[in-house]
Length: 251
Image 1 (cartoon, helix red, strand yellow):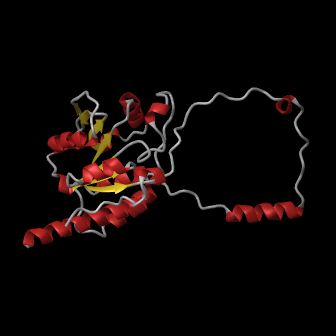
Image 2: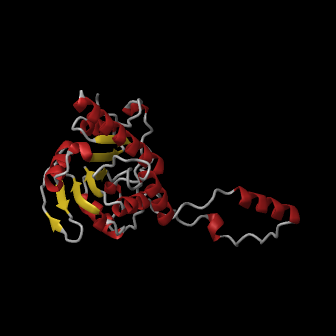
Image 3: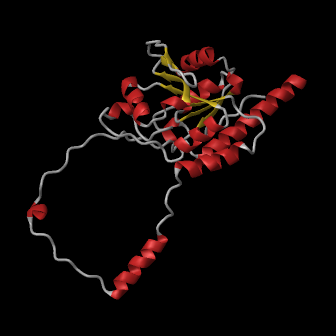
């Protein structure tokens, strides 16, 4: 039985195009900004009541990292068969932008569930790695440092450059080349010694999901960054693939 990925049936052309975040200059002053400020208008009781109703309709605040971590740990507890290594792409998987459209001076941010999920994996003793084809690996590495998540990864393969980071000691080996993600996974496998069938991969591009799935890695396509729902789906698919592999061996 073939491995199950989580890639939707839609083709690349059907997927919404992603707009890189670019720096834009601030508009100059307009006649309105140069004019005197408008008078302060005090709301009536009806306006105040409407404002209170609006506040009640606002969505609840986003979950913090600790709450996401707790939910991710609960999800992990649902499955007996767990991956030994979880590999993440960077752009539009862990963070909502393309590195090449950003400056090292900027302060990056992750998708809101990403860090909590990685905290949960670390607490569960599951290794985490990066596989990215970013054309600006220097910016990606700076952002990883700024986000204080570097210590979470046992390996970083960014555009063919592999940095191996054991749990408490950093060792860096660079393989400079423009490579396909299959080569990234080959390098990660050699450095970690973890078989492909024990890996779980999250990426936002269909072509990467297809090629890495063929290597035996359970691969999940994410459209709006990694989140708890995608995390659970990935673990479910991984457990299904492990069961299918065991069944085929018994036969």
